[in-house]
Image 1 (tube, rainbow, N blue to C red):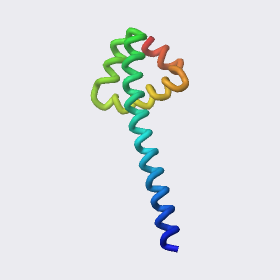
Image 2 (tube, one colour):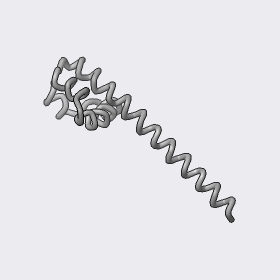
Image 3 (cartoon, rainbow, N blue to C red):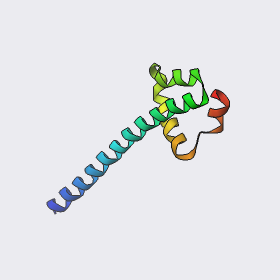
Image 4 (cartoon, one colour):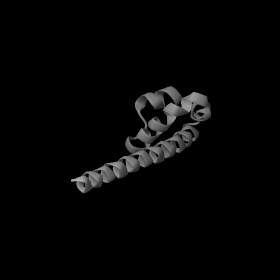
Length: 80
């Protein structure tokens, strides 16, 4: 019984590590895409948000979402 428990603990531990790694990668790619999108839109303020202090926290997930589903209308209306 202990070996089965250890097996499932290993599986869930590995899957949690993979999910965490994928989140870090998607956040990094999303941040880069945010900066690229700001250059394409010609928005200095969008670029500034992508590199300035605590606002970087929000640009990564929005950039990842924009990469997968396209930029949301509010983003284009605000910065475009």
